[in-house]
Length: 542
Image (cartoon, rainbow, N blue to C red; front, top):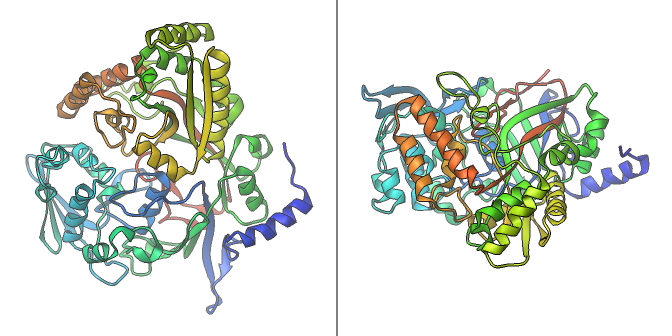
């Protein structure tokens, strides 16, 4: 393992100051100037810049984590990852479970104005008006008329949400939905202060001063591509429960940089790459966190070659996924042979793991992969294929890309891959535009149900991003959404994955496990398995 040389460390510390990292964040607790008291401060890292903090458009884990801590909706997740009332202090449900009435508590925006029911009505309808990335989540929630609005058969004003008065919000569903409360934790359902958003226009959510806050923290500053600072929101309705005064977040893309910052006291929590696992796995501050998020490859279904089932299967089969996770990543990540990850969802009657029920797809030898590839090439009348593999500038994903390139070119005669590295936010934009050949993608669940992985692939779905379309698959998802019997619904979900994966429309790679260094005196950080990743509200320093 690489060792840190004293001279390089000294030089690195000077470079950090010049790169804009928070110089004041060298300790978990620092003196609060002017009072002499200790201000509770921690310094964290994120691997990429925030693409946007406009909750109508946000769809990435960095943006969701930030939004989850600076804003708040009707519900928020608790330490057991269950929905608990937040801005709403009361939730009443009609006898037929389709009309939900929320009474709002007394809470304010950071400009001193009251959070009202209109803020929710405006925000929810705006998602459709601006073609927000997660507009289909309102369909998942069964909010009345959401599907018709998406199909442009109705106007966003007809969405089933209405402010009855300043403190009362009424939401009407198409049918009872046991996932409804859980979905409300997602930032897509957060309120927005209408006049502020309209005045900011397209700049809303792009700078710290182009935002209002109603959560546990406020975004005090935001230096793009460098980091941001969260400070305790003293006007938050539950401010007494917030123990931290400040959270510094630095954008750190390289694991070597992160480790140096840890060693020099500049970071209190670090995500480790495989290069450092052996060096730190016996450290008292070392821990691992299993996640139900997945890493996979999308293929552009507009390309003739990727419309061929044999070629898709060959590409997937030619990758040694155990070698990728055990040797290249070496961080506890698990090889993935399906879409829904392991230890995430269990059948309602016999509590069997979804992954165990459907098993592993498309296993075979390199010889099997080559045979499929040759058959596919013959079917598309080609002798060879050459594609670009797009990958974000995350160290682990770049390592994965290099490994995949080697595997495909070595195990499939006639295959050539060029790696195209782009910033994280650029990768997201290219995915949305389906402007790629192949791309390494990630997906973390928005809620605790297999549907969060399965309804991504419906025709024209906002998360589809590869122009895949299959009427039979769409029908299976519709049938599952309409099925009220839990056991029968689960069977439909299993069948939907079988349809997608038996034809290998996406190429699963691995299920995430994070290797982390975090000071042991930091307590109360919640990491949710679905929806926004982290909740900082309850963090305290012992």
